[in-house]
Structure formats: structure tokens, C-alpha cells
Image 1 (cartoon, one colour):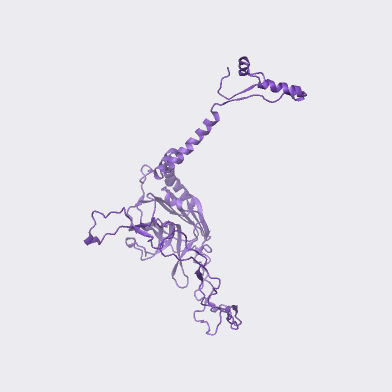
Image 2: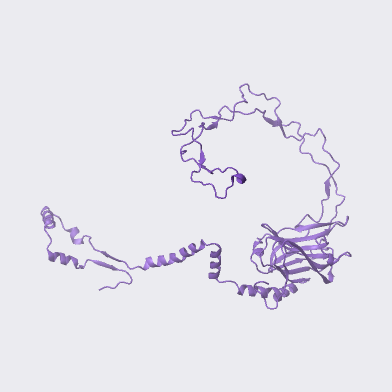
Length: 455
């Protein structure tokens, strides 16, 4: 692989984009569907991501005309399984070809799509393990990285269904000419009212509108740009006569050109008269052809018994190169495939996890792709510092106990006392009194914040 290499490990790599690719290998013996499960497993890594292309495999049918040297898209297969993507459509295929027991024709059956979001497996550029298990009880399971992403029944969870309908529409049955399937019809007794005027327009000019003051009827809405200059390389013979590009007329702040009043809905408008609809007394319902027994009907209650296959192949087209494949295995025991994954896939995951960039590296990479993230990082880093600084910054506040004492509140006030107090307020303060005020009294309180010294 290009990255996260495991020493000594090699894989099969699709190297060219916009090309058709095909490669295959014959199995040691054909897989015959009988009483044992089918387990298919392999690894895929979209090393360059994926724009449009597939990474699925085909299990090629064991037929007499199978020639692997001629393997191409029309070669008969039994099962197609694996990831596929184009545009924003992410898929994980399970397609099998079911043989009609009466006609012998093959029809593709598609398993229901998974209920999980598959985008991550196509875009994270990691090696993922894809596993298919089909059981003799006609059930299936699909795993990605050993986790179930889809499961169901071959009888119920495929499209089109395995078994056709018992009855079909008679192809020779035709709808009679006199069949009336109109549920509603125009009322034949309805008459257009005499005052109904179909000629009234839907909209009319607003007669109450007045042209705004300052509207310039003779000014054009656009004028040639006076600052535009003819290019030096302009050739009148080759390019024609040069004309300055136009710009909005700055004089048209209110409006220019011919003024017309705005249009409003016409209150007299009624439109074309039509009779009201009533229930059709001759209505016979929706016609449908008669049913007949399906001549191709069959009932296959054991669709697991598919055509045996004898080779595995990749027949792909992709717009993205360097798709990596590795560790294909076909067996009948899920435990064997799990041990195979322990030896092949898990070492890749260990190396990839060990090489994962740290948080700082991920943030830097994201900011290189989106420079505006630097501003967000700066704000996120500076906010805690600003909060801590504002909380611990030293502050000193002095509060004086100016409230009245209890004895003052209870002391009776006479007129003489009030007059004496007023005279004392008017008297000038002595210097020694000012000095005394500067010294804190016993009733003063000094609040000291953390980090301040008290002298």
C-alpha cells in the first residue's frame, strides 16, 4: 500500500483510471450450494478515495463455456458482492442470479440496501473488511469490519421477489369503449350567470398611484461608464466598434424612464366560466383487466440452491486509481474467515491506528484546508486566559460604615439640637480634624483581595 504499510505485505491494485479492468482466478474446486453456508471475504482500500467506480467481486458460474482468458462484463456469474459508488450514491451490492425452474432463464435479484451510512468506508482511506455469509436456511448476513450492516431473507428481502405472482393481468383483456371511468363530470344543468364578464383582465393599473417626485422621464436607466477606456489590443477591424460598458445611471435615485402605475388585482375579474363538477351517475370505477393464472408461476422455497461457481473475478471500471484488494477467502465456516482476518486484516488496522496523527496535527491539517479555522483556534485559546486573568486580577475596595448607630436612632431629636447640628456643619474644618479623618476609625472596614499585602 502507499501508506500504513505492513512489512512484507502485498495486494492486488487497480492502477489506471477510466479504464476497463478484468482479472480472475480458478478455485481449487467448485463451490456447490447444498447444506453448508457460503462465506466470502476480502479487503478493500480506496487509497485515493473514490469518485466513481466499483470494488466488487464476481463468483463466476461453473459452466462449460467459462474461459477465464475471455472474462468480461457479459461472463456468467452466480453472485456479485462488494462496494460500489458513483456521485453521492454509496452502495454495497449483493446480487445473485436466480434460475427460473420452468423457463431456464436467469434473473438478477438484488438484496435490500443496508440501513447504515456507507460514506465513511469509501472516504477514510482505510482498509476495510467485507464479508458475505449466505446460509442454507435462506438467510444472509453482510459484515463490514466484522460488524453486521445488513441481514435478511433470500425469500423476502430481495427485489424482484424470488417467486412470481400466482395471477397476472390478462394481456388480451381490453377496456370496453362504453366504460365510463370519470368520477366527476360538469353539471349539464348549470348556466353561466348573465353578469359574468369573461373579458375583465386579471390585473389593472392602480388608479390611485401617483408618480413620485423627482422621477426623470427623459433619463436612461443605464449610461456608458465614463471611466472605461478602450483596451490597447482592441482592433476595430477584428472586434468591431468599441463601446464602453454600461453602468446604472447615478441620476436615477428615484426613477428614470417612462413611469407607469403599478398593477393591482382586478376586483371585477372572474375568468372563464366553467360549470361546477358533480358526481357522475354513470361512473363505473377504474377499469382493470381480468386476472388469469400466471403460466410462468413457480414456487421456490429454497433459493439458496444457486448455480455452483468455480472462479472468482474482478471486472471493474473506475475513475479513481490505486484501489487496493487483498486476502480473498471462500469457505463455509465463519470462524475460519475470522482467523484469516486476524492474520491479514487486523495487522493493517494496528499499523493504521499507530500512524494516526495526534490532535494537534489534525487541527493543523484542518486549518491548512480551511484558513478561517485559525481565527477560531485563537478565540478558543484566548478565552480561558481572559477569564482567568479577569478573575484573579487584584482589586481593592474600601467601604465605610456610614450607617447610623443604634444609640443615634433611639436618641430623641429636639429643635435646639437640630439647629446646633446645622451650625456645626457650616463651621470650617480644622486641619487637625482633616488629619484625623484620614486615619481609619474602628468602625471602618477594609476589604483586601487575594494577593494584596496589609501594612
